[in-house]
Length: 122
Ligand SMILES: [Cu+2]
Image (cartoon, rainbow, N blue to C red; front, side):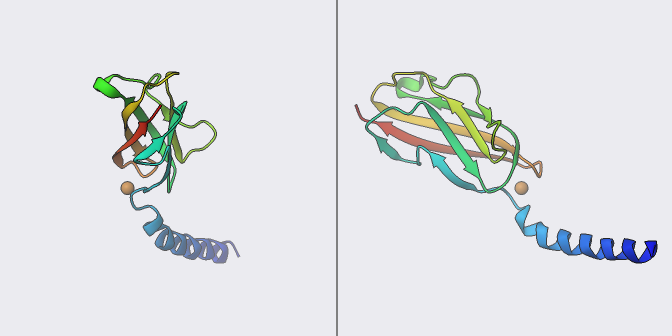
């Protein structure tokens, strides 16, 4: 009985491992707020990137006109959502182009990075 259960579990584990393998490929960026290359009439108060899978950790830095850093701290994984990286922005962003640089360590241990932009028109 125990042996049968064990082999059934092993078979299940093998099937799960085989089907899970593609899902464990590098995480993809699924969405972001603001969207990449967005043109906004109102300055956002935060930037977040949502991935196709869980992340272990990450940093998110946003710079604006003149290369000035406008994000508060280094950002990090959203405490409420393990697939999201987020950072708050300083209030009152001026008009101009902003660049968000994200670096993450995915749950599979792989390091990935993304660069997105948005423009504030005020
Ligand atoms: Cu990976």
